[in-house]
Image (tube, rainbow, N blue to C red; front, side, top):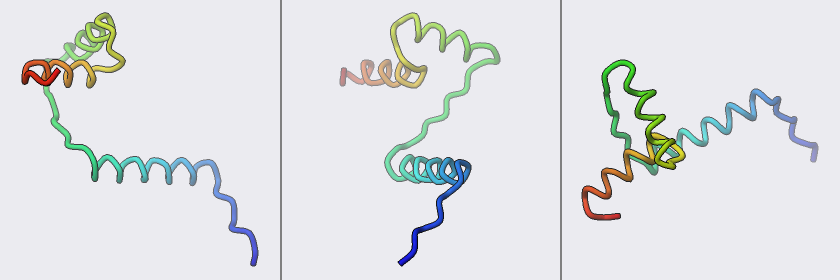
Length: 70
């Protein structure tokens, strides 16, 4: 029994990306949010100033707080 051929770094990166995309599709829902041009960076900076690690975590925290779940 021989060894499997080693994947190139590009092949490994593509496999990881494919796995992550599949996991996201199977386990998460997406809610696109549209804001006026230029506001994305302002919102991201505001979230960082508030101590959030991402704009997504800031927005989801606001939603769940409004729903009374946090």
